[in-house]
Length: 103
Image (tube, rainbow, N blue to C red; front, side, top):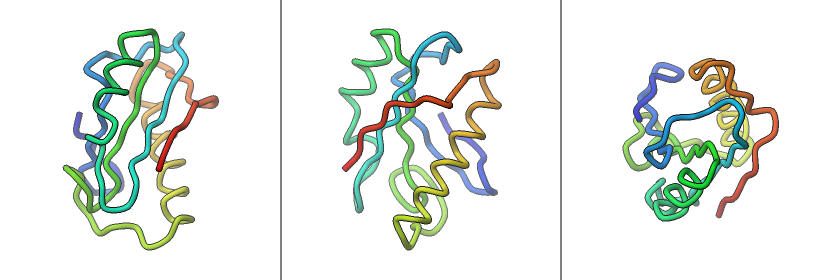
């Protein structure tokens, strides 16, 4: 799905399944120079086994617009803000506890 976030288009893969507030959530983060497609099999697997999945393209990567973020700290701040924003989109989806994997 494409979100309008911080005046930019951000692509977030959910594994093709709607988020459900009662389910645990998994955040999958790609490495430098990659995009969300690195996690395609994982997003599908977890989404079909009772998890909310978020696998975003960082700015300037994959299908997300904007300039790439210059530091790891900037990426961490961006992810925290994105999680807060996503929580407002889906019927009180709680993203206070998120399992995370990344490169």
